Image (cartoon, rainbow, N blue to C red; front, side):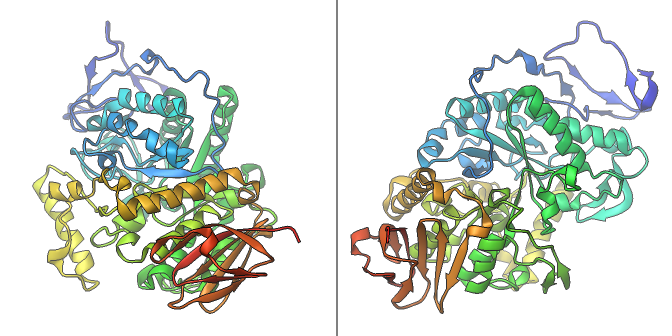
Amino acid sequence: MDRQPGGWWRCVVEHAGHGSDYAFSVDGGPTRPDPRSAWQPNGVHGPSRIFDTGRYGWRDAGWTGLDVRGQLFYELHVGTFTAEGTLASAAGRLDHLVDLGVDVVELMPVAAFEGRWGWGYDGVALYAVHEPYGGPAGLQEFVDACHARGLAVCLDVVYNHLGPSGNYVGTFGPYFTQRHETPWGSAVNLDDAGRAHVRRFLCDNALHWFDDFHVDALRLDAVHSLVDFSGRHLLAQLSDEVAELSSKLNRPLALVAESDLNDPRMVEPTSAGGMGMTAQWDDDVHHALHCLLTDEQQGYYCDFGGLEVLARTLTRAFRHAGDYSTFRGKNWGRPIDPHKHRGHQFLAYLQNHDQVGNRAVGDRISASVSRGRLAIGAALVLTSAYTPMIFMGEEWAAGTPWQFFTDFADPGLARAVSDGRRSEFAEHGWDAGSIPDPQDPATRDASVLDWTEPVRGRHAELLEWYRDLVALRRAEPDLRVDDLSRVEVTIGEDWVAAHRGGFDVVANLGSGDAVVPTRGRGKVLLAFGDRGRLDPDDVETTGSRVRLGPDTVAVLRLMPA
């Protein structure tokens, strides 16, 4: 190849095109795949194959996009959503999501990684689509199928690190820097020598998914680990470039950040010194709900639990907003301004892949709490002022766990992953033998959703509850208002009442009956108790009071005075 200005190398290969295989040898070294390869049909160690994205005949010309703020997200892992674990088989289940009322399908990472199965956060070919899922053509078909059903697609991308096997980008340039350390080792180079090309590599990747694959949003993994002390943070640069592309394509494009910083600057516009993210995940809402419903308070849950914390997160997004975080050992976060920051800029959820899969045995909250408490959690999320998200299978209280699994070929790496997982939880009192081996194919298989469950017994009953809550939220403007200054939450010893315009959502978490005050005379629309679904007419209301049994929730419409 011939050296070009700016560190580039170039050559012309006659008759190369779609389907041609190629690889690079740097200074006579072993052949390596292209860091920008869109197709790795023989895995992340094999040669790259040219994929012409323009060959696909898109059928979504009528798709004008979707502003994802306030829409219902559904987090989906391709490899365990169905037994086949492919994009094509996942597309075959999209009608279930439409019936549920989902607006945005959030795919966990599909960037190519080693092995058949994995979570996707060990991706190493960031431009390629994991071949066992269906490769790049499979993703185009999946997005098209979603758009045909009115579903937007959000793709999870990982820019803060690369996986441990097949990570060859360092061969081609200074993609990492020893100036900063992250939980995965040396940081991606955003502010050291050679950073301009690295930043271009990442921004071009984002634009690639929007333009060539028609995705509507990107979920950016762990942006707090994007260490950047340059004059302009990568997120701000990315936000401005995506806004420019959105204007060009004439459809909304979104960036949703996973951030541990509790900093509202994340969702403030770049023109005001913010990062410009469309929205961000809000783990504090999850933690407040999880601890309240399960009584767990270990580890990073230690400052959560209790109705006061729940009330704070439902009205002000963050539990820690400049106050002391016991787990971190320091003051953490900054407060939001409820008159400035909108509720739909924050994603709320009862479960997600992290909060299930990073547990020792991957147990869902449904394995620990009553049906009534599950219903309470769902009602508080789906009627909140936030953008709600459901983790796949949550809507029917899936009986399958979702565990941590990998498929590394190198025996040393495989053993290190398995031993590390066991030792990590053994330190917290777990029997090492009870921890599922990530490398055992049975661990992945146990995590596959059981699609016979949604039509059976308690699963079907909870699924109906989710559908009714989603339908109510869609139908009622008061439940879609995201003005946090208008959200009120009152609490008692064991009860909570969330006030949303003309609606009160009341819940009793005690072991006995509770009389919960409302803001006036109300009509019960939906109700669920510890023994299952309740007829609204059977819920006792007297004036501005409602009597609820243990682990019971009701949604009331306030009547005119």
